[in-house]
Image 1 (spheres, rainbow, N blue to C red):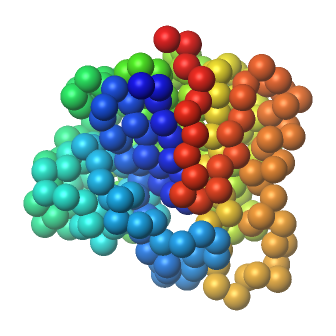
Image 2: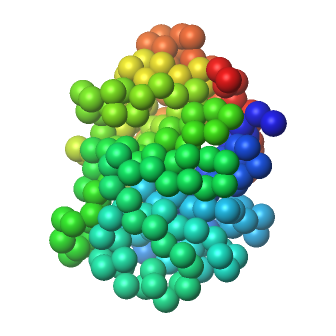
Length: 256
């Protein structure tokens, strides 16, 4: 069965490969602090069904304890090293937790999952110490799928990630400005050109937006997906880009 990717919004995706369901950075709420879900419904219960969950870093829109509490007993959590110490609520979930650092590899059924570096502030904000790295993950099964988490563009990205078939890349954010340690549509297209996968799915845009900011540069909320498609066509024309709506899925082409 070919790999299947479902985008639920923000950085939350289900990757199904080799009969194994892997969920990334689950966020299953309508509102988080000053952020409100502006597009797409809150993901349905089926979105929380997974064999394992990959958490890229400790920011609360990526490691969200109430969303993790929706997972079934026994769902395995793969988290950055130091996460259990920085976020004591993880232990109270009663789920098996595996901490990883860049270069570590874990087995999930027929899949091998390798942690890779990300250029991002990985600590638990606002006050957490800098003990936990931000990570991306390469899911290796029938296809190799790269989930970038939250990251900026860095020189060794392609070498650290290695050959991949599918890239799930953040192309926006939840506010009108993206600073250091983030990809916007243009930088994501540059990353795509360096990684040279067969397929890509833009994520981390067009879902949450600060309350009261609808009139401030609204195109920064709606436009990143389309902008990434345009820029990817110019910088990486051989890559098939799947621009999904919330809850939509695709079966990207894999080399194997």
